[in-house]
Image (cartoon, rainbow, N blue to C red; front, side, top):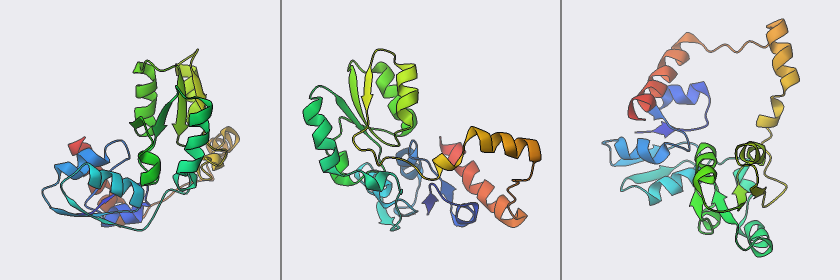
Length: 194
């Protein structure tokens, strides 16, 4: 079996099902197969392996944002804010996850911060999430452990580009029908699980 996360439609078309960082453990544990090829994020795959009895074969890919966060980056704000809760994304290095008070996807971090008794949080994921966390949790403080937690792909999507695309309808994404149909099966398989 091969679940895929953060991949192109063509890769999804070759996968048995898809997953996200929020549901990867649940998806993998739902599979009958004992051996899983996990594509493409090796760190998320390692996290899944820690939470599953499946044999996980890791593809050597990674998230270009979470790969920039090191344990040393977390230790500095931990000293500066000793009562802060450190939330880490499961696509971070294992040594970063070892320092975490909570390991969660971005949606999981939003939920956790809303229910936590902590007033300060160190946010181990793309720093753009801090705006949403602050908006959802006024009066609480959120810190990025490093200035490098910026997703280059996410930052390509701006309001101006969205407006322009909608006005001109020139930025059309097309997926060949054969790939679309096969990729849809992988997405539907994920949705059936979660």
